[in-house]
Image 1 (tube, rainbow, N blue to C red):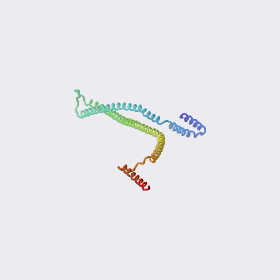
Image 2: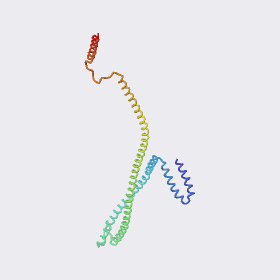
Image 3: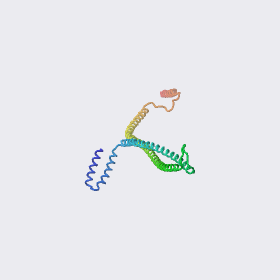
Image 4: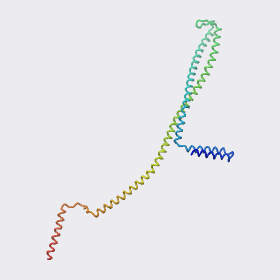
Length: 267
């Protein structure tokens, strides 16, 4: 089916290019989008969901690569932090030595002694000048290094945030894909239920037929009962009196005696 669509669309687009001239490009673009949409509609939804899952899995190498870059940068930032701290400590030590030499140079003495060795003021001024120049160079270097450290720390923090966002997006996509799967499953269940409802209507038809047969049998049974009642011994609505036999005997004896008396009188 897909091959037919692709082949047919390609033929139509090729013929359109010959017939439409300069307008063919816009028609071809529209035809391309239409073809793409038709092809996508032919792909089963469960296949598309599986493709989405595969795309999420394909994010793992990129995430792992970002983790590696961040780990390497964390090591470099830590090294820079140690270097900046060492520069600051060295500058502090150099500053203290310069201030000590400055104080000695301003003391007015001719000689000063350091670690058992004597130095004149010319040597002191020369050393003080060299130390001060070196301090200024080291301070400028330390400032630049600290700025580099600050920039790399900001970049590292930004990379961490991006990675966190990427991981959060991956988790959200996984949840959304699972929701799509659940919705597709419900659609499939609904379709199956609709098929079952058709079968249920057939069952209902059979049930109605059985009920009709039962009704006809009930009518036949009722007619049979009526016929039995009309031809059988009628059932008294009241209980017979206890002396019924005596009443019948007395009644008929009395009738017999009357009849006999009548016959005698007629003779």
